Image 1: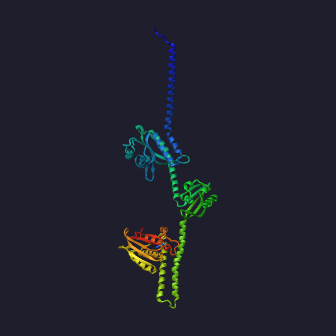
Image 2: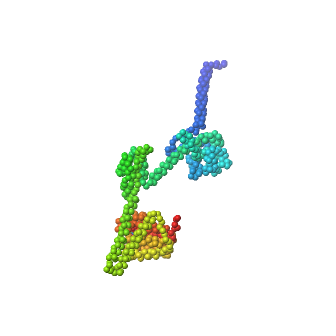
Image 3: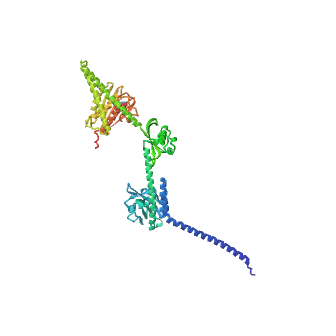
Length: 578
Ligand code: ADP
């Protein structure tokens, strides 16, 4: 019996199959639709990549650069984009360095290490970069290894197969946008076209557009770097100044506060800028000066005292208003200059004048006294020996006056910058020392003099009078500054290094305070509170006399124990500079 077909069931099955197919078809249709949309989208995306690329770079150029990090980031994005657009493995900008005449690769680059960038510099007149830079024309190299124009050193080092070099030209425009100037600043280098290709004419055209926008980034970067350098220099100048500088705007905010001012006012400079001066400036007098200048535009000069470390120092405070373009007041500036040294010098000069007057009057009084006594003696009251003694004192006092006047003449000669004239001949220092000791013995009975000559001492070529003056000053001081007497020892020996003579004058006197030693050989230096007369000129002149011979002087001393002055005279003075 044939099995009966259940058509009804069959129909249902077919219907279900059809439904299923329909559903699948819908999925396929959707998928195709989706794919088509994606393709369209991709197509749309692809076009702008090529056609809009240069303008994205231009946008980059328009963004103002305000920090060094931003500049680096901008350059990094720029080289990366150019490499992407031109499908290159490497991209770097080389800038012309006026000082060295080289085209120097600038970090950051794309596809190159910092070390590679550092060494990549070539002469602006040589190689492919040089040719593009000089001619202002782009250059394509298809086979870097065999092309005679390439530098094989860098071809090898950077692994270059082919390249595109485009000159970077910055255009300066006037207000109407007309180009008034074109400056060649460097070249843009793009290496190794990806996927084994070469750089095409299309790449060159694109490269030229990219280079133009790159140049404008560089122009801006240059301006920025110049401004940065100016600012750095200004800051360095402000910081290296020995004066304190403090500026306040008309709202009372501190705009400039250099290290010196900050230290004087006891505020860290980085915390001071931007704050209200009324709170930051603790010194009432300075605050008052700032206020007066801000209120009335007054220019004020005043002397103030600050405690610096443990010492008191004198400062001249000078304030002035800062005016804007229309002469309106936009703030004020205060300059604080340390005048302690000037005041000290001023005081020293005053003291010097009084010491010199005293030094002149003492021998004159004595000369006048003895001469008057001798003149008054018409009866012959004084015997011959006493008269001789008087005359000897007059003679010595005249010598003292002559020495003082010579010192003053030498001082004015040195101050005027004129070299001391030397009359040279062979000199035996030991002999001069012995002679001086004999003279000194006439003035004192409390001191013992010893001249010690160690070994054989060379005869030197020097100015005898001046060597005499040097030793007279040092031995005179040794006597003057050991009021209780003691030994004054002059040691003379050969100085092995120069082949000249080393002389030491040692006393057992009052010594020199440590803090005075650094300025002992400066003019007018005297130790305060000593009752010994003097001008503070002797050691200053002695130093100059020794230095005129090409020698040097120094001292070792301990207060209360005595001093030793050492000096070296070379075998002969150095030849004079014309
Ligand atoms: P003056 O003796 O005319 O004051 P100098 O230039 O010769 O000037 O000396 C400067 C100062 O150095 C002196 O005032 C003195 O205080 C100190 N001085 C110089 N020589 C000695 C010494 N041998 N011992 C101690 N103090 C000295």
